[in-house]
Each structure stands twice: as C-alpha cells, then as structure tokens.
Image (cartoon, rainbow, N blue to C red; front, side, top):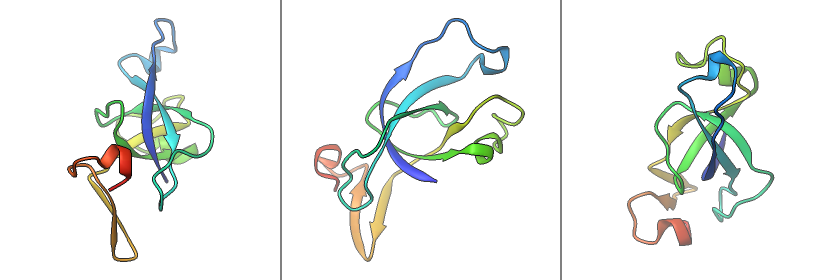
Length: 106
C-alpha cells in the first residue's frame, strides 16, 4: 500500500465494459515524512468516492482486484481509503481537518 494525493482525473468514454461506472483518478505518491509528492503519478480506480486534493491509500497489483467492487476487473491500482490523519513516531504528520493540511502536511 502507498499513500498518495489525488491530483487529477481521467475521462474515458470508451473502455472495457468491466470498468463502466468507475471513476479513474490520477494519484501522485507522497513521502510519509514531508507529504511532498514523489515518484510518477498513477491512474487508480476509485472505490471510495475520493476527490482532487485528498490523501488516499492505494493498493496495486493483485491486491487491487481484491475489493468487492474490483474483483474480476482489469485494474492494477485501486484507491481503498481516504486518509483522515497520519501519525508517525508519535507525531501528527497529516490531518485532513487541520487548516493548511494540504499545503503544510499537518
């Protein structure tokens, strides 16, 4: 699993019938201590109703097909949670509800 920030979306009117009804979001991995984006963004199937700017938990590979919504579907990356807060070594690294959380990582 990785933590990432939703940075965009993909619109596709023509796709596999097994993907109809799914929102496709672009997720950029984030560093756990700085909450800065790092690495290449990926397209993930959204199963939890995430939106742009939110910090999410993403699974990939065979794990991405182990949710009730994605079982048997052609997916390789799935958003499985919207993150409310992250505590690391006793420090609050991120809180969705803190003012400025998106800009400062707290």
